[in-house]
Image (cartoon, rainbow, N blue to C red; front, top):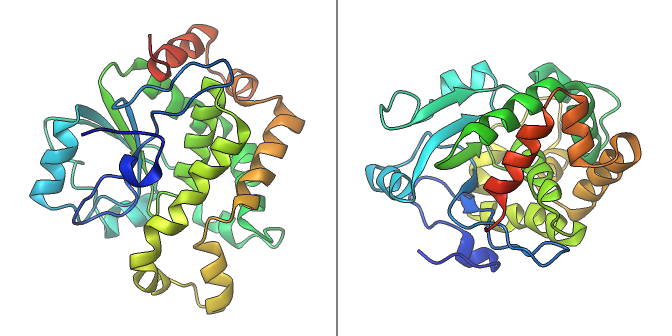
Length: 245
């Protein structure tokens, strides 16, 4: 399967998930290329068919990092959670109560809170990625928020330009369009359909807000991860995993 920087070509055509894609193929500011076939971002994997599962395993994925919290993993179990062929890790990035904080006015605000409150957990995610030599897939429920923050940090660490990171994030809205009505069924009672629809989107300005916060407060992905406990040698290993040799 050929992956390019074209979103539609990097997107895996699956029966049971709509936002599974390779983060490789992007060019960095120094002209290097993020490796294809090593790191994948995804939405929920609970409805993957047997064909879907074999396709993902056929790409060399042997580690799954599930970023959801306990109620989510129990209600919609990851199909790889008990498969012997993969290492499955559940690293819950968001306490569900966080999403009801009064100071969250946008997804961008939520991403800032995620960076500020989940630093050690994000460092744990990146430590797992650093130690994994084969293909790895990380996911949440929509493959947009928690997954989007991890993907953005990875691409920033690789040296991918800001506009590319924002574009990669914004791609989710197109990918999830076929199932938006299904996703809207999970709307919390306290939110209107219009409010929840905005939260189910991936407007570019949300990632702009997150990246502004990442740089103004922490100085970028590398310094953020080191501040939260990732070792310098793990950073270098990660860059090796990310970039073509």
